[in-house]
Length: 75
Image 1 (spheres, one colour):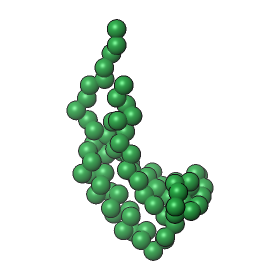
Image 2 (cartoon, helix red, strand yellow):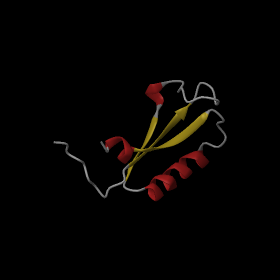
Image 3 (cartoon, helix red, strand yellow):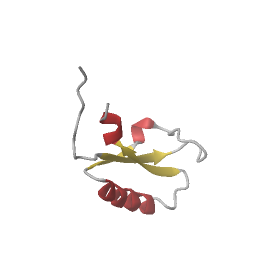
Image 4 (cartoon, helix red, strand yellow):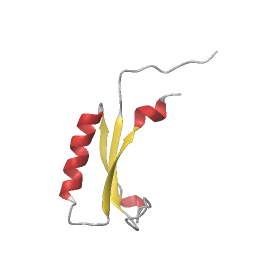
């Protein structure tokens, strides 16, 4: 018997930091990751991501990402 996790929440994580190389996604120092937060929907996550991305536009090595947590939680 399998149990499915059903939820109407579509959680998204926004985080970022300085990359070693802009052609990849390896962070320079994991202790310095900026975890912006977990958001209940993509629209609010995208708003937070855009704000952080625009605030760090002068730092070419800094990138922010949106992770679809709800996809990781679904079996």
